[in-house]
Length: 398
Image (cartoon, rainbow, N blue to C red; front, side, top):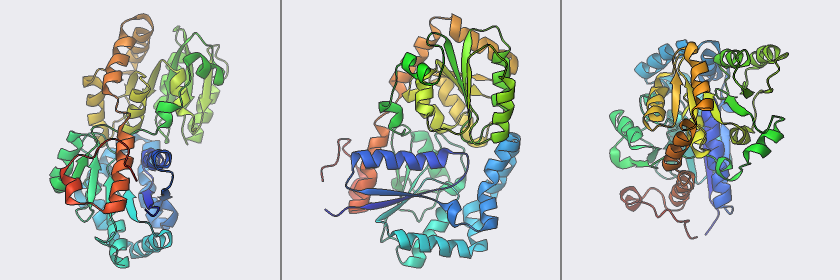
C-alpha cells in the first residue's frame, strides 16, 4: 500500500483552527507514521486585502469582543465564503497552485472561511470528485457560521449530534455528515502529563499552593488583566499562571501589574506549554473556546468561563455544555469571580465532583477515531459503506 499524503488547510480566527490542524498532524503521525500529513495556513497565499478579511476576526477580538457579534451576523447573512470568491479570483489560482505543488491524496479543511476557495481550486485542477475533500467543523455545539457548509465537499465531520443538527439546518445532507461523539484533542494533552508538584516546579511555582491558570486562547483578551488584578489584590492563598497569547501589549500590562506582588505569578506570551500548565493548575479561567474546553476536560481541570467579556455567538452553546455537564462555572459579574475561586479552595467537595464529571465526559479516543477515518478516506474515498456504517475504532490494519 502506497503512502498517502493528506493536506490540512487552516487559517486565522483565534488560534483554534491552527491548533486543530496541529492536532490532526500530531495524532496521525503517531498512529500512522508511514503516511504524511502536511499542514498549510491559507494566510500565506492570500493577497493583502484577503489577509485583512481573514484577519479581521482576530483584530476585532483583540480590540473588543463585543464587535464580533456584528461581524458574525453580517458574515452569516451574506454567506461570506461563497460571496467572497468572486472578488478574489487570484486567490483561487494561488490555492490551485498550492494544491498542485503539494499533490495530496486528499484535502481537509478546518476553517469556515476557505471551503469555497478549496472547492473552486479543485474544480480548476480537475480534482473535483476525484480526490476527497473533507471539512472538519471545529466548533463544538451549534450557532456557528453557515460558511462551514459546502455541499460540494465529500464529507463533513462534526464533534457532537448537536453539531450535526446545525450542519443539516445549514443545508448539508445528513448522509454526508459523520459525528465523532466528542471533540478530538491533541495527544500531548493525554500522554505528556506531569504530576502537579513536578509541573509547578517546572514553572517556578510553590508545590503546595492553590494554582489558577488564566488564559483566553491565542488572541489574549483584556479580561486576563482584570482577573489577574483581582486575584493579585485578594487575600486568597493562590498563585497564578497567566497566558497572554500573542497580545504583546497585554503581556506588558500584566507584567507591570504583578511586578511587586508577593504572590507567585508567572506571565507568558504565546506558548506551547499549555498542556503542562494545565498539569500545574487546580482550575483554569478562560473564554469558552471549544478547543480549550476539550483540553481541560481531558486534563480533568475544572473550568471557570469568562462570561464578562462579550461571548461570541458560536460559543454560547459551549457555556451550556460546560455548566450542564457539571465541569465548570461561568463568571457573569466580576464581583462573583473572587467567590468562585474561594469556593474552589475552601469547599472540599466541589473540585473532586467536577473532576469526576470530566472523567465520564472526556473522549480521548476521538482524535484516534478521526485519524482512522481520514486514512480510510484517503485510501478508499468516501464510500457508501463508510457513510452508512461505524468505523471499527481499533487501528486500521494496513
